[in-house]
Length: 258
Image (cartoon, rainbow, N blue to C red; front, side, top):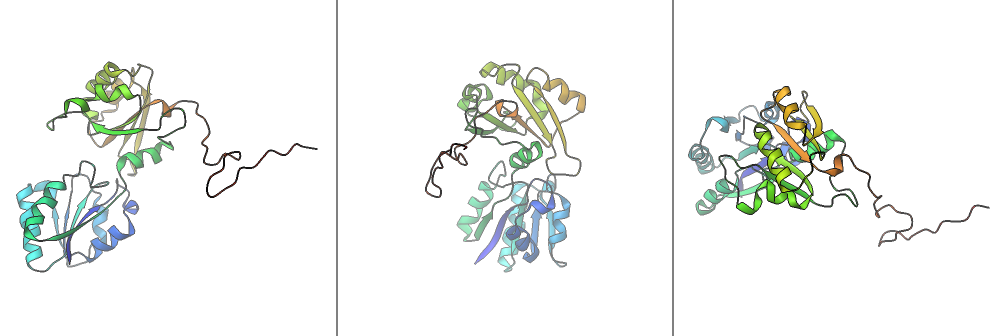
């Protein structure tokens, strides 16, 4: 029997949680949510007698103690994370602690902020002949980065980059991206609090964006998107090309006009 559900609550808009995630929160006896990022409106889905904990005020041991106690009492626990818990969600250490205890758990995916940012920008990250690769990464901070995952190394690929948890170090971000090969005129977009009511967007280039971030006073909850997809001509895809056939559609020849 599954007793713990790790649920991605989405990027901010409470309607961007999945139907399954919403249902499980409404059924849970204990809800532990990441209060520093999860929209508190998500808690309106909880049942009236649910016990609610804000993990922003707890360490790992405290979270696990609450989880283990609830499971020992036969209760269902909803562990609610922002976005999708697979990306910078710190859920692996929680799941690994539950395994030896024989506690069954399940992960419910959510909408990540890098996808909500694309929606806010009305932008596709993978444009034909511009970029077919999306790199999701962050700048090193208190969490170190493997040497080959430094921004300057990843920048060599010239792919679309979505950079989490780094806007407070924007000067360093720009320095490493240029060091790695992006030109100063490379387009950059900053989406602040994607999908929240107070969402904001900054657009610039690597030459201008750090000053824009300082002027706007942005220090957290912002996604950095870098790449030519933000401002570039591109080829139309083959997916809907009338002259391109695939297993669901035959190609159509142009008929000369009479």
